[in-house]
Image (tube, rainbow, N blue to C red; front, side, top):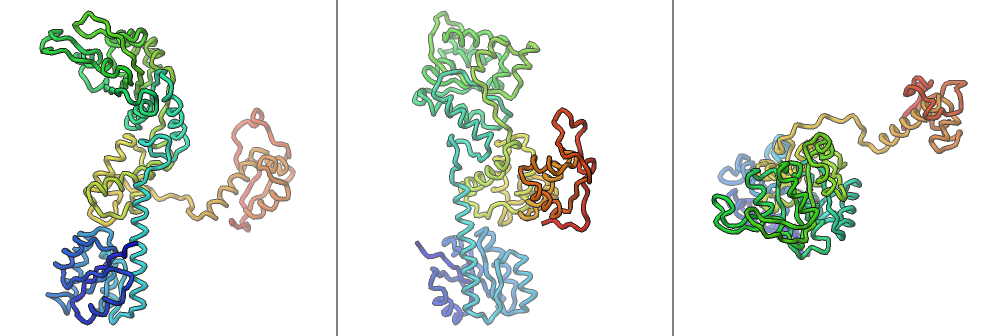
Length: 483
């Protein structure tokens, strides 16, 4: 493996000579002032930097050193910079860390300590790079264009895989931006029609007067401006797949013609008399409740039954567990590389805001926000403000696993006792543990069952109103401790 590059910014020739041999595991590049440091950093892309604060033209002060620190952070966002100085150590140390320095070493430096600090900075940089590469790597998903770790979305992907090999019509139901076209393309590309055309038509994006021509084509002279024969989307998809996006917006006047095509697999161009037989698989998508529209007369019921041979419901991003942050990191890595932005990922405020946001625009909104934040971020990390998201409210859920596990265990015991009307034997059966074990857990969590309570758990039909821990005789024991 190649050695990491260490940039040393120092104007003392004696120290420079000493530093040259002090870091045998690095490729050392040198600069003696701010201008040289910027040029070298831009050319070499160092993994870490060691910076002296006393640089010309202010070798006795620190102004030029702090200006160089700021310049390095702008030139190489995320670059860990170790500051070395002997001038007013504590004040400068605090100021340097506040300005974004990785660490601070007091002069005269102890080379062993300095090597340890620089080594830690290099390892940090290596870990960040590894995380960036992992974020950029495709996630395990049956469909390459879909990145998900959510069980529901993975089931959708597996359903699409199974449907790809058969030519039944498929209706994709989901909100705008959930990936309907990506799934439609997967239905085409994973099936036997993959080498044939894939033609997509957005029924909501084309004026009604032009939609019939777009779908069925037209003959020369069919209407004013028709100076040549044009092949429609259906005919262009012959042998392959026709994707009708936002099919719920298809005008009623065209629904009858589309129904005839689906029944007979025959099209007739506008202004033409010749019937053309085509072999097309139809995949449609919408974010509208077509069954409700059909019941109210807003969509033809017979056309709906032709389109929804199999219906696939796509969950919105807000219902896909941790997919929002997973996708955000993937988009971040892709756009940071595309725009050559050396950022260090999302800070805590951004991660919390991404997890808390409802994402009404789904994956499309997420990508747009991340792309804009990567372009506009001025700090080493993307913040919630860069994403134009409100900071998430602080969560009252414990992060400590031991505490969280104890809280969940305590809640389960309280619920079991409530459902069993305070009966220990019945509660133990509900929890799948023995009575002695439950007695031990009651003491451990500071809970008590009501003396003399019935031991038999009530069934669902006899439970009446929802029970609470208090109604079941469950009370906090002040002397009990959570573990």
